[in-house]
Image (cartoon, rainbow over all chains, first blue to last red; front, side, top):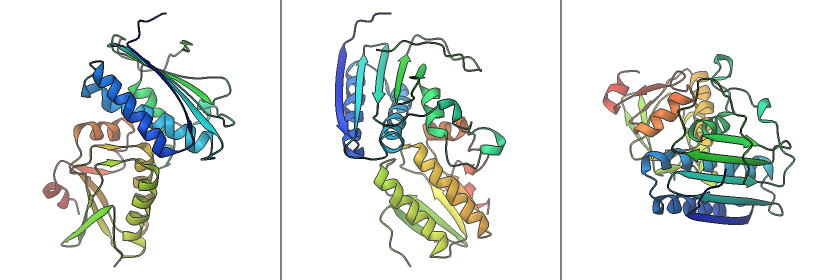
Length: 154
Length: 117
């Protein structure tokens, strides 16, 4: 599906959390400029923060010689992002469900869960080093069970 | 007594009430320092009962949630209790989504939280 984007930006940044924070702030400012209200930006802030930190910390292992590329596009109803690191990737299916009783006290898995909760679509490539995220304000509420088969990369 | 950069700690009876200096608990370096200070309350200062007051905290990431889970284990193994209060609606929602509201005792106000100890 093609969209009329109001805003489209790309960044390539070293594995640096301060730089990632600047990118995040730019994205949130762009969404605000495009009319996205605070009721949406909290969740988007959380999802983008988690995805960027995953790329830097888990993907690139904070290696300053490895880069993270970020693509961002939005209009008044849809925002899309692609975040790619230079790490070995991972299988999202291997991440334990943190809401299961036996995993409640495990300090892991919640970042990915929050990304899926606050975004309409979260898809990883096969290698697991690139994530596509979309927030569509016109999308129906998600079903109880995950049923993501969308492969709509930028 | 250790000095704290990320925390403001006061004593109410046998409960240490902890407030956060940062409005957004997320930056990687902040998180590490915050975790060290929280763990130090139990491991170095010998605090037993902790009430984390989230007044003024606007945002927290999963890294902060993970620190709280580890803190909860340390407090429990020390024979104490950990409780949370004054979470803004969005942060409350994060705890509910991740089901951590079942792991932690969460109260609307500091006054009602103090009765949990």
